[in-house]
Image (cartoon, rainbow, N blue to C red; front, side, top):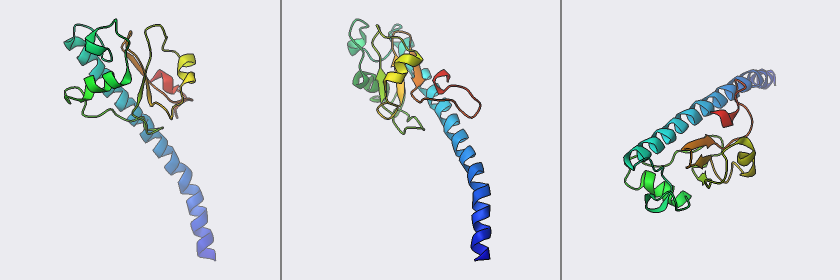
Length: 144
């Protein structure tokens, strides 16, 4: 009985410390995945006359879609082998905004983080982490 009590106390001490490290690892992975996505978007645009990925036939007059974006970035594996996942929601789907929409926190709040891991605005070549709240340093995830 005493051994079980001691193990319980030790677990209560260690568990919060472990949780903090898990959170920090997810934050680091989110930043790394955003960097990969941003670099892929920039490389694609640089090789296609400034047209960001997502538009059918690389025509910015065509509305951007997730399927086209995914194909343009991953099919040839030239830019990404697969779309990275949001480490908080485990989603690799990217919500693609139209040029009429703005990429701000109010727009991001409309979309569930469990439906899309990222939010992308082709008109500005901006991509954001779709996760509410702040990280362990008090920085908004949206500001990554």
